[in-house]
Length: 209
Image 1 (tube, rainbow, N blue to C red):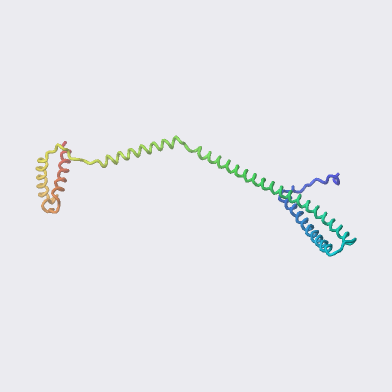
Image 2 (cartoon, rainbow, N blue to C red; image 1 turned 180 degrees about the vertical axis):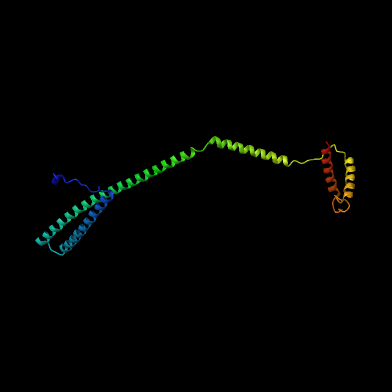
């Protein structure tokens, strides 16, 4: 039975790459044979071109025809093998493309799984609440800044004459105590001193109130 159908092969299965390599090797062997046949045909043609018609030329022509038939047979076999090799190369390219596609799909699946896992930890409601709190804090900060930058104006109902009188009194007290150096500081502006005394006077009134 083994002689008819062959024994079961236990070695590694052939691959497309090995099959293509074997086919290309056969094609190269056929090309060598074709080159040899072409050289023989050229020799016969050259000899027949120098011979006269007769039995010798006819016999040489028959040999050339047989070589030509062999060349056509080898050329047909080579074309078939080249087509088989091309088909296998296309199958190899399709297999490689399919592998690349499957690898890309696997990577996309892993990436999608990782993104789902990471985004699942994100609480959108918590982020929105945090944004609202930040906005509220910014508004509170602006209110505080506005309040801190508010100016303290002197009330409009203050009597200027009364302020001048108390200013003179404060000036005399400062001169006696040497605190403000009223006469020694002549380089200071009288308006600046008046304003300072007004502030002190307003502070005293608030304390009395």
